[in-house]
Length: 305
Image (cartoon, rainbow, N blue to C red; front, side, top):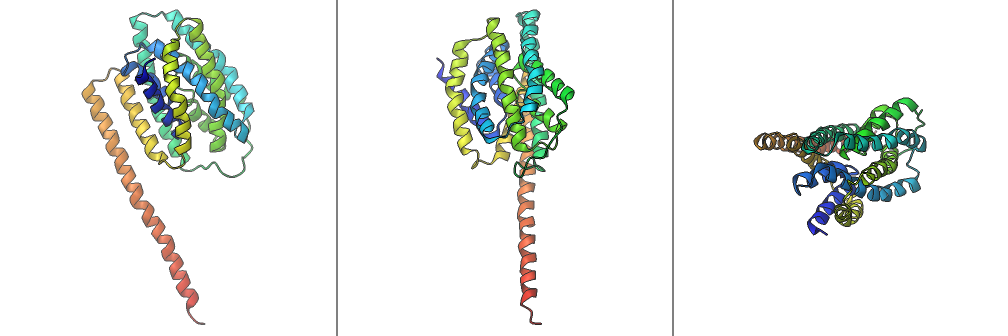
């Protein structure tokens, strides 16, 4: 068993534990770009590892009651058969170099969508909290079913999307859904989704057990470590780094020249640092204004009448 693969799984697991996203979006391109594993084998192995990892978090959310089971049912009704169809589509296309290249390009596009989805989720998260009583929502069966179908097909083809893409689609369709319920619902529906895709790959002989085992060896403790330190780590920095990594990986998978990848990634880092500095400057000013007002109020209270 390759310990280097286990270390990679450990790093990805920690990121997933910290952010709740990025498993397939990180692990699959690492397997393809760093370890030189064929895209189909990388996709199948990552799906198998995800099928084992996700129940850990899903069980916690189910116990806490942060799962909308009606949404889970409609999503799974579309995503489970669609994921298997995605795997079947891969087999119908064949396994030659052209197909491998097509999967590589599809993975790059999926990563771009995942990066954009994470940015959208972060922007929306600034106006949302996971506290307070849950507002009742009206489940819309057909749109929810279609989200499952589209997400399942992408997952079956690329292993990306069970968290990054579907959670953003749910956020857009159900803006009143609490953050905790959003994450818990997405995580639970992803369990049968990735399991269906993994079974499909195993059925057609694409699954590499030694590869999946090495990834799991590191990813399971990584998820537990990430979950334990998530309350202390600056989540914004972690998510920013994850978006930059996804952007660079997607451009590389899309066969963009290395110089261009470096320039775009560098620009993204500069923008992220600039926004972080601006945010740090604004926060103390906002905090200083409130105590100032309080002091003026106290002084007024001390004026004798």
